[in-house]
Length: 148
Image (tube, rainbow, N blue to C red; front, side, top):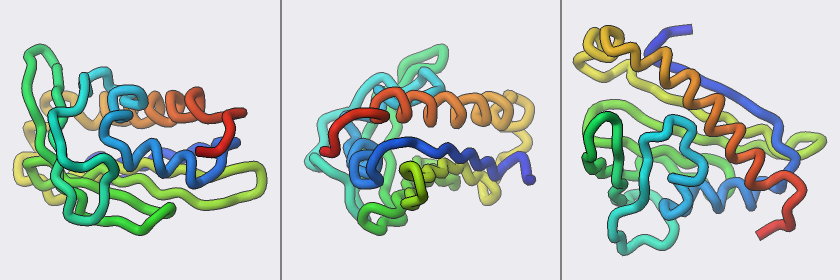
């Protein structure tokens, strides 16, 4: 696999709609973020994300900063992806399977122009760990919980 396209999957024993609704709510992103960098949502007019939504997040990685994202893929209950400033994408897909939902999280930086800087900073390696941790947090939040 390309180190600038990372993908992790997990079977989560929770309804697809519940999982999708958490990811589609930017106020919940700090709860599920496995990187530890997402600190909260900036004021947004979007209660729930949809195609074309712009939403901002308070971030911290050594220093405080803000990140603005645009939803670039959206299929209700099945797929959502957003692009921050920079040419990379965070994507989640949700598929009903026996025993729950197969959730896939992807980080796609193959079109990012300065990939060499990402590699020098160890971003692919830390992002791989963050993907795994995010799916773990999503599991902890939803397994054995009633559907929302």
